Length: 77
Image (cartoon, rainbow, N blue to C red; front, top):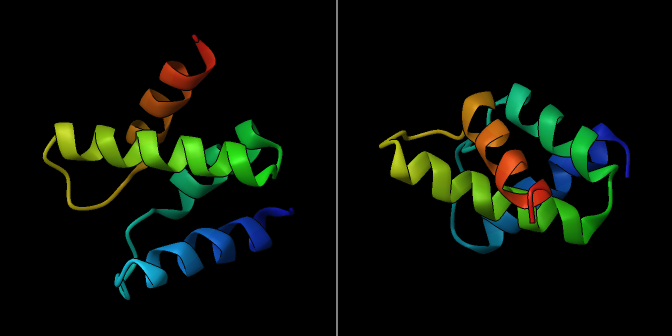
């Protein structure tokens, strides 16, 4: 998937979960896309870890910092 498809993919999954307003910043989605290379399974894993990082930091939106934390967590395994 390219970046636009990746963002739409994440947005679609969030809408299935009942979220209509943005939850991921553009920078976070860009970092997730670059690291996942557009592979859906990798996008899912990184997005979930980024959500966990945002929750742990008490943030209401997943920003690039949360995405970087997720990337470090997922790629270090």
